[in-house]
Amino acid sequence: MSIKILIPTPLRPYAGKQSIIEVTAQTVGEALKALVAQHPDLRKHLFSEDGKLRSFVNVYLNDEDIRYLSKDATPVKETDTISIVPSVAGGI
Amino acid sequence: MALTIPLALYDRLRQHGEATYPHECCGVLVGEFDENGAKTVRAAVQCGNTRTDSPANRYHISPSELVRIQREALLAGHDIVGFYHSHPDHLAKWSATDLAEAHWTGCSYVITSVEKGQAVLTNSFLLLDQEETKRFEDEALEIIEK
Image (cartoon, rainbow over all chains, first blue to last red; front, side):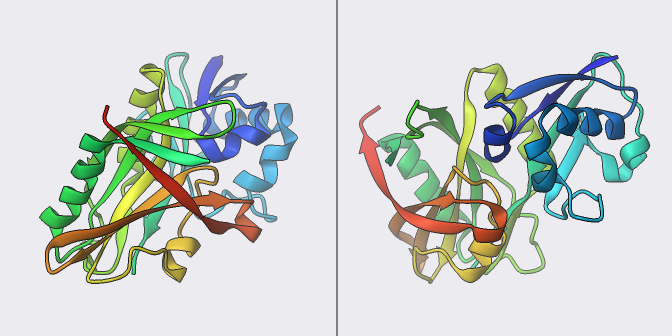
């Protein structure tokens, strides 16, 4: 099914400058695979060499972190939105 | 390129740092990019600091807050253009930790020094390049009336 992925600012140069991309997928994992298939330059910014999401990249299905759902196997529905949000932190 | 911010929002983010002193405050800057990458802030969204274990020298914004703010910004035709936080009794300059934990290239990181509860300096830094070669560059802060 068709699902929207919200692309954060730092990744838009590698996603055709788009802020929202639609892909066809049944799971979050399939959606991310479809995303990097459409925009191969995104791959190294999202995934480390072992194929896992980089540690500072958070992926949410609607308002839930996929780490606490079924990760890549999390099923998606037509009305769902996947958000990619790099972490924000720091300090003195 | 400058980060343009209305005076009311500039004051608001500085006051946030005073309110949370001696702990670090943090928040998200929502606005617009122009075709050259210059940014104008339209909202400064206060966030919670999840680093309750070390709030005097660390901050972290919950990804779930970022998700909500990003979604609402896009619906309103805006964007996340940067973030702000405070340095209690410390310089208004990025630290090694700030750089290590910064991942929103193209966005501004605004830092306010808060000394003995009073906001002193506020500076902006633009995060450049890719993750492996990222760096901060000093960025002009242009304060406008509205």
